[in-house]
Amino acid sequence: MARIPVTILTGFLGSGKTTLLNRILQENHGHRIAVIENEFGETGIDNELLVQEADEQIIEMNNGCICCTVRGDLVRILGDLARRQAAGEAAFERVIIETTGLADPAPVAQTFFVDDEIADAYLLDAIVTVVDAKHAPQQLDEHHEAQEQVGFADRILLSKTDLVGARDAEGLEQRLRRMNPRAPISRVHFGATAIAEILDIRGFNLNAILDIEPAFLTDTDHEHDDDVGSFVFASKQPFDPLLLEDFFGGLVQVYGNDLLRYKGVLSVKGTNRRVVLQGVHMMVGSEPGAPWKPGEPRESRIVFIGRRLPREVLERGLTRALAASV
Image (cartoon, rainbow, N blue to C red; front, side, top):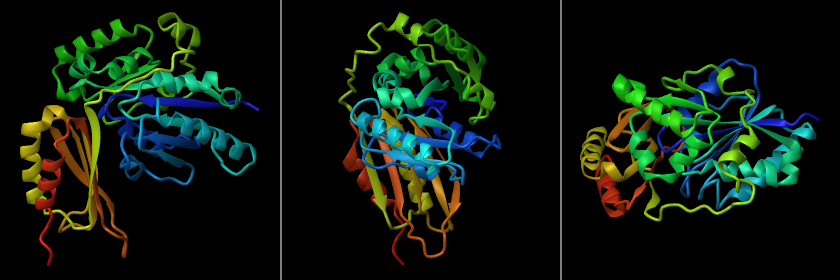
C-alpha cells in the first residue's frame, strides 16, 4: 500500500499555524485529513479553534512538547491511525501535524526514519514553517527553537507582513534565505496560500538534512528554556468585557515582552457567542467565535505561555475582570 503523506506544520508561538490550518480545513480541496496537534501545557485551546468537518479528525496532545516528552504518544497515535486506516475504520488520506511553537522539528521528523513501523506506513512530505514578520527578528535572536524551525523548513510562509514596513520585511526575508537557502519563501495573509504550496510537494530531502545536521538520525537530545512555562485560567463565570479590556491593556504594558503567547475561548457577559482571544507579546485582539448551544456549559479558558509568568498577577487580575453575579 502507498505510504501516507505527512506534513509537519511548525513555527514559533503566535506565528499563525492554527490560522493556516483552519484555512486548509475550510478549503474545498477534496483531501481527507487527519490532524494531530500539540500544545505546550496541561490543557489546550487550539482544538476549539479548529474547524471541525466531517472528513477530518483532530487528535490533541497536551502537557508537553511533541519533540520530547510526548514523542512516544506521537508514535502511538500514528501507529493507531495507520492500523485504523488499513482496517477501513478511518477514512483519511494524509496527516498534518501541528507542533507547539516551542518544538524543535528535528526530533519530530526523526520519528519517520528511526521507527520502523512508522517509516513503513508514512512518508514525510514536507516541513512547512510559518514565520511571524512582526516578532521573528527577536524570536530568532532569543530562541534556538525558532532558528531550528527555519533551518529545517522545506517551505517558509511569512505571515503578518502588513504589520511591518517593506524594508523590514525584505530584510527578514534576506535573513531567512541566509539561514535556509533551500526553502522557497511565500508571504501569506491570515493563512491564505495555495494548497499546492503545502501538500504533496515532496519537499523533505533526508540527504540535504544530513548535510546540515549529520547527527540528525541519532541525536535525540533537546532542551527547553527553563524560564518558559505555561499557565491556564478557567472560570464558569462570564467576563465583564470592559474590565477584561482594561486588564489586558495594563498587562501587556508591564509584562508584554515576556508573554510569548496567550490565547483563549471566553464566555463574555452580553454575548451569546464565544469570544476568541489571541495575543503575542504586546499585540492582543479578539473576535467572535461559534455560538453557545442551548444548555451548553459556558466556561472560559485562557492559556498563557511565557517567561517567568506572573501567575498571581494573572489570577488576581482575571478574577477581578469577571462579571458580578446577578
